[in-house]
Length: 311
Image 1 (cartoon, rainbow, N blue to C red):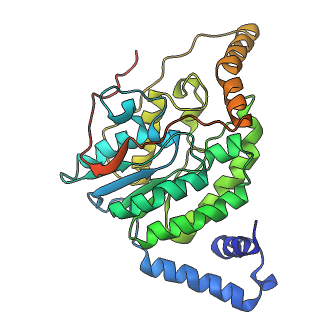
Image 2 (image 1 turned 90 degrees about the vertical axis):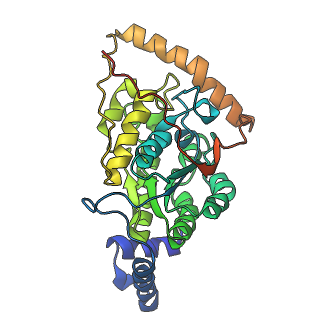
């Protein structure tokens, strides 16, 4: 991590010794934080009444695009947690508009280069930003360098007047392959919390969302969320925003018990059908040809029928 980011981290969180830093550098860090608090708009506080947002823009990759949550009547054939959040927010603001600029497979730098400026042109008052997962999982990304790139983008969004929601990565500790990246994801999450604290952002904490430990929350590829997972995340995001909502918790149907041999067979099928193709594409530097966002312009929210309760 760079010295500049270390300094900001120490001054924002109280970690490290300011006495070991140059006095002018410590003073600069404190003044910068005070300036941010003075000029950035406040986020919604619990119990402060109806939400104030009228233009919501979602930025990110497949997670925000809604992969794993198919809906034929939704733009791009996907619904996802962001659409579900927009549906709830629009029910409380008649003139509410929503854009989703997320495109699957995008790395953090691609998200910032391709989506940040179009988002600012929409003049949103609420932005969700989830980025860095593909870097960490598929490109052996450095969590400190990723945070350094993310920091100025968050600053621009907050300075433009938008409330910003950032996402921690989920805890894959119990999974045999993705669990190997648990340490990097945890470091990135901590860096992200520093950024959120610095600029007054909200954090939607996937890492702490214990419901995601249930396999029913995940798609068959074990990387993207199922409709139930997207529904659960949407409810968590709305609660992070302190917005009352109608998304009831759904109890997933218990999965059939498997013995060790059956579980390993399923792991081999997953590796053949999903993991091996991912690895090959990454080694050959191939990317899936998804170039267009499903909701590139802010407009009314489409609300399909709600997820049915499983019995």
